[in-house]
Image (cartoon, rainbow, N blue to C red; front, side, top):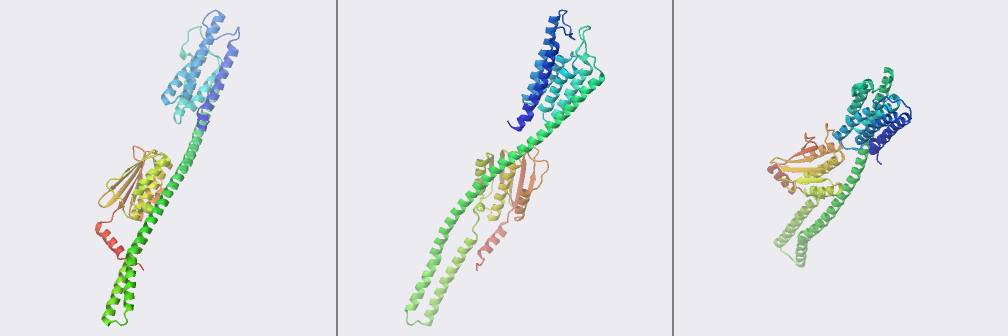
Length: 438
């Protein structure tokens, strides 16, 4: 049994059963004894009068008890509210003629105050408890509200002080039970939060493990392909050049005498071959230096992250790529993938979302990415470590971040990254090509 069921159903049901059982026992012990003067007169025959009197109590009492437990175990505000009204009415009908203020009446009224404070969630239980207290108070001070035929009823002669004592007990009981329900809600909410965070932690740990495994496999595959490509390039270009240099040098050394012009041409040929080999070696070194992180190699990584995240968490993710390209360079690619990863974490950890939508669109001067979820949202956005990390990454590429909760619910973040114009992009590319590797 979990804490929620214990505080919301099991404990209130048990306590209400104790109160109702006490009321039934007291009535049975007092009013089924032969010769007892009954306040309600149906028939001059004592035995018949006693039978009618018991039926007048137990039939409404039974209906009232069923309605009380209907309030505790039915779902929905309106079914519970209906049971509350019917139950209060039958409780008053069963006990309004009884001269048992601090035994039967107090037990029945206490059971309903207990139910009103426990069956409804805050703040509705405040109203339900107040309504119950007012309802019982009205019939305590004005018992003739249900009608009175002269000579058929003998109402109690309790003093006002006794009614006030009973009323104070019901108010204190109602206040205590409302407070208990409030504290139980807080405790259950804390337990649910802890349980949710533990589940999220486990899922995100598995997600990160799968993502690292994907990165590691991608990196190993990339290294293998790059190794094959570099060795092939070195063999085809630099190996060919050095072979020519060796061949020309051997040929020159085989001559006993060479004319000055021939020597100059030979060394010029050797120099040209060496220059070609050096240039090609520089190009390969450039390629090695500019090797990209497999995670930032292209936007395809975002789609792989989506697949892994869905498998691990069960949260549905849609990606609308729009008119975006596959590659925006290692820096922008890395920024986008890291922000998507952080957005996934926020949606499951804080938003408790079940669906996430990622939308990309490229404008002439900027790239936008919008991540929306259907979670609980927030009234006020507090920028923690995750959002601060997003802003830092975007600042490196001149981007901006907007976060807010739409009116229709959920949470949304919008990323805007400016794109280099073509002239500047060509200048950067030309600079990189002319960069001299020492």
